[in-house]
Length: 242
Image 1 (cartoon, rainbow, N blue to C red):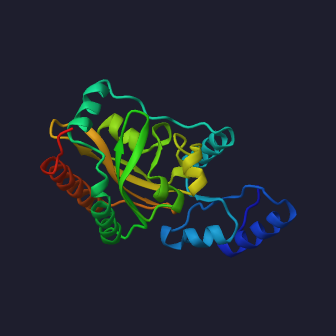
Image 2 (spheres, one colour):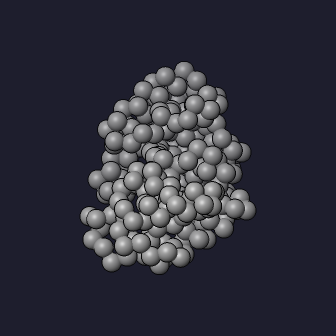
């Protein structure tokens, strides 16, 4: 453990340590300072520092998360007790509908822009996979496949709990820091709200993501929930009988 006096000192020390011991994970603790004095995420990353922590709780969470990442341990989404009814609601809505992709992709572009987020998507959580019905800004591989395993899906947790999820920094969250999909793509921030069928069943979620940790304001949450409600209504209005 080294005790730098300033961030500039910490940056210099991090460079020397990395040069002497390549691959070492460096954590910077910032104690007793005004939050306005905190270095930005870009400054931290450019210094070769893995993460910035400001409380003992954050140190503990990072260490637990680091351990989880090293062994690939993470929390998988549970199945709702009424999973059969939920899947039936998806079938009755005639989802997914390929003809909707272009329109939904455009709407996700607009959502990401309006919320100043690099990524936005509308997901459909099926029995074993999560489909991206509308997508904007995600990595090329995900935009091409438009699906992931439900077991690695954060939206699966939104559906299981039927409530909003906000993860300010995935890397510091012991539940999800070991998720290989999130690690592969460098995802750090997630916010998602349920999208419901007419009978109230959560069929998927409307989400925004970032590769940097973020805060999510009540105003942003209200906007995301409002957009999800509008999306639910339109899906019902445009339903196609299976």
